[in-house]
Length: 169
Image 1 (tube, helix red, strand yellow):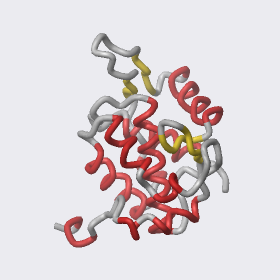
Image 2 (tube, one colour):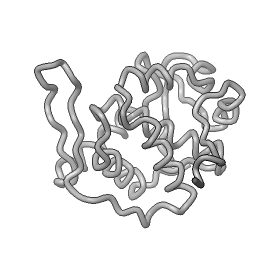
Image 3 (cartoon, helix red, strand yellow):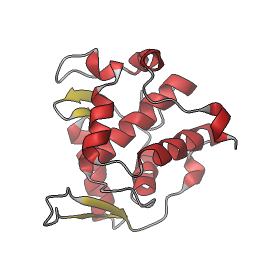
């Protein structure tokens, strides 16, 4: 599975642009995980193509790749990563340009916006707890890659579910 640079960058821009509560690197990593594994479960393909590993703080994109994308976005002036503030809140990621939503198809946009609504007002620790409760995370050992096919075990435990009936109202 190949990474989709345009989708990764525009997904980061999206989350940094929608007023996400305390969006730091840790919370962003979990949001990317939820988007990709929900997409794989529903559409049989991830949106970004990033690889994820089981880490102490929950599922994370492979660090070397994840931080490369964030550093490139910051150095190109597309995002700003602010320092942690006095309240010990994490670094904040803010988009400095609008995302290009044309890189996503309609089904992908629905997943992205539904998950944005679900997690927008949750703290990083809450999102981390939800991610760590997911079967794909629980089914691998620390440091191992989390295979996308494990996404099919998610709804049997009622984790992240997108309610089809309520989404059309």
